[in-house]
Image (tube, rainbow, N blue to C red; front, side, top):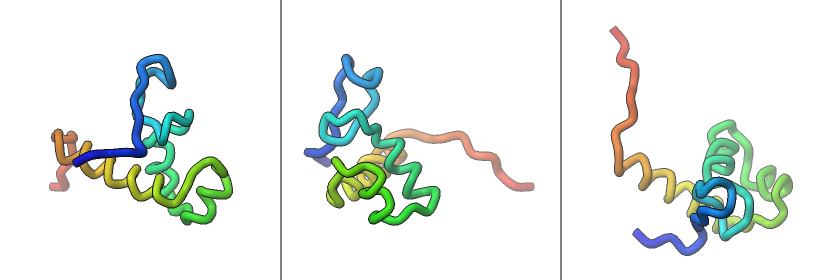
Length: 76
């Protein structure tokens, strides 16, 4: 899967994946979506973002989870 809107620069934001070279980490955007913010609210809070950035951020996060196992607590 190829990502055109996700950038990683070791000299910016500690090398975490960001949106289009902006200082907006993918994790921040995904977290806002997970917290229930609408696309409109996110775009208002970060006017440099575009709707396509949000979609690619979600695709990137999904691919990152696919690539590794995360520890889960199982119910008894």
